[in-house]
Length: 380
Image 1: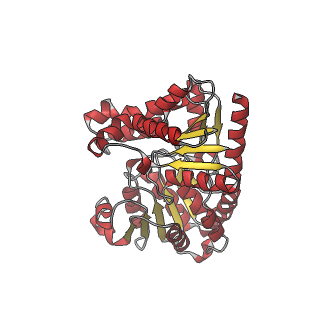
Image 2: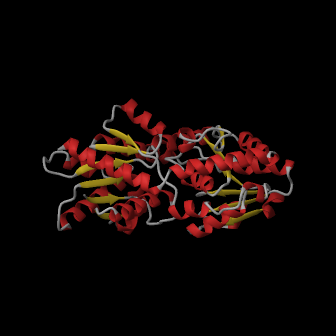
Image 3: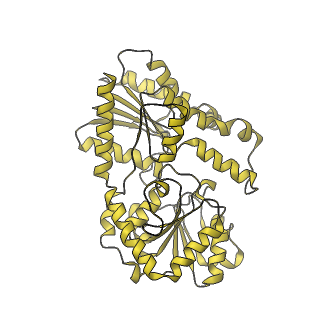
């Protein structure tokens, strides 16, 4: 197959959404397919219009850039594969043509649920948004998702909740393909320290410091944990912000116990997964959730919400402690339980590692290859 992948995310192999496209580009090339990939940096947007375009007209600019790439291409593509409805204007035009590529819409996570989580935090008084966001721009990404599925031949999602949402809306055909552990992290997990060798007072959190990752609940949970175990330490990685900005969200008395790593390579992530015992993942909405899966692969005991693969594949008290979203008390109490019970941490770490071993990059690539080939045959 000859594929054109189009991501609207920055080109960052260590970032969650972008990592998926790096996996697909590199893996499918190794399997003999011709693959080209466009990232955010490749999208032609006038700098004077950047802010307005990204909030209001991003699919138009992504579609325009992709159309030019199609015109410049020396040979036709068999598949065009786009993230989060970003190519719906182009797909709408291509649908009228009898000879065209297979059009695929790929949802990292249905924007409806991310928007719902944000507005829930607003209603709870945890944050504020502008009137423009509340009444206009906030509703655009969910609408783009829907249009992407409407004008594509196939939609691929990463979790059951998104799948159920699109089934409810009547979109077919639809496929769900779970993501994979980074191969380097999976390999490193084989020699990672056992839970019995780790200090349960060392907690780890990884992800962008945004509301959707549960950042309104982590500080209060950490305060409660430290009341029970004053010697607890917390490392936050991949936040996208520095030490001073992040610790400002925590009580003054707790700030010296917190270490912030704004960005981390895969090898740096492996080091942190190895030296800490318990991984915290209070996300409100997820497409899948690379971070807790990789923590399981590295033998950590994980506390996570039902978001993403936590609601699909992980079993509470077997692979991880699975808690409700938006609750600092649940996050704190589940973490304290693991700190107090080493046998439960060890049990979960062993079974969590086995679950992670099933989600290999080879399995993921094989599913994408099979689904795309099958969709092409059905369309023909």
